[in-house]
Image (cartoon, rainbow, N blue to C red):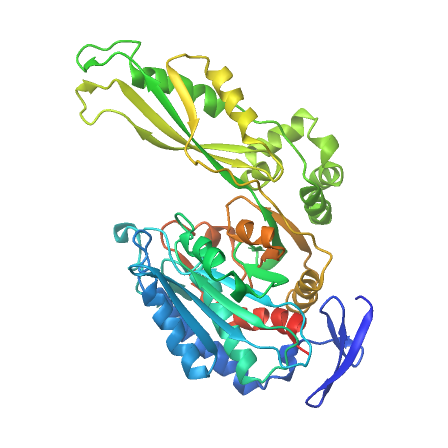
Length: 480
């Protein structure tokens, strides 16, 4: 479990603390939560459910966000707990919220940041079984927009802060809670905070954010996936130009026709397969849990991607496909405003996701050559492309996640993972911070798919347990 660093006494428990964040007691692994009474654990679980319901009832749909309502929720609780905090309102109705538990040792290591965003995506109540901002408990779930992305994790971070304070955990690092606005759109909350309040990050060493995935299959956790890196966005607009006219007289050179022909080629195009070291590590870790044929592929995926049979498997498996290539998804279409009018222009937007280290310009050029139509243009929508980055796994934070996961999910592999979606970890790693997506919750594939979808929800039992898992990870790294 690493090299012995120090021995400390906490209450009646003699804890041996190791460099990787792991803990032992009497020769057996122990967790910081082992010294919390059963009555207190019950109280924290009850608070988590109540606060989760309250938080989900706050409508922070972006646009417009109105995250200041969520900030008021956080501030009321942390004020009552006596936890230092500050509010920054950088735009009407929008702001960031910072709170801190200071280290209690004479000398301190670099801090940990618990990052979350308060805004949520839009929702249509007509397609939900319960109103999306009801916070209702039904069928063993708490329902509401943000239950998977990411009010659930913001809630776990909030409860973990309260637990650290109430249990008087001795800290050798500051623990910083940072809730930001506008993650689901422009990321202005994080950008503003880094530009204007970077000193409050205190040269942090670690950051925990959304992005992790702990997949539950048949009642068992298949893996604890720690997001060590993310793909980055490269949105493209495809615009076709053609001869306009009346809809009663079709013409083959119309803009919509040209657009459809171009999109047909783009959708059929398969970008080259590429194996990142972190993906190679992930697949090797998962090989023992797969069928014999797939396990053989996973043990040497660089060889497997050369075989037609495996290439076909990649095409059919969404969870594998995005790990091994840059992806292109058709998301938006536009043309005439009237059915009987053939427009001069028709357009489509493509959501392109680039693997870390990838260059988007050759991909755009490949698409232009593929379409091969002078009347169709393909241009980037985002004016600035952020080169994707990722963090390594040889550090105390990753070690603590492995130690804690081994106690809660025995026999389950902890694996580094690349997530398909962008997270704001990309903005914090260039500051010298090891940033992970780690979730203290498990979810089935069906539950995970409610993120940004209809009937978003989280199991009550997960809300009761999740904050304690996060507490154990944070206390395992920051606790003295």
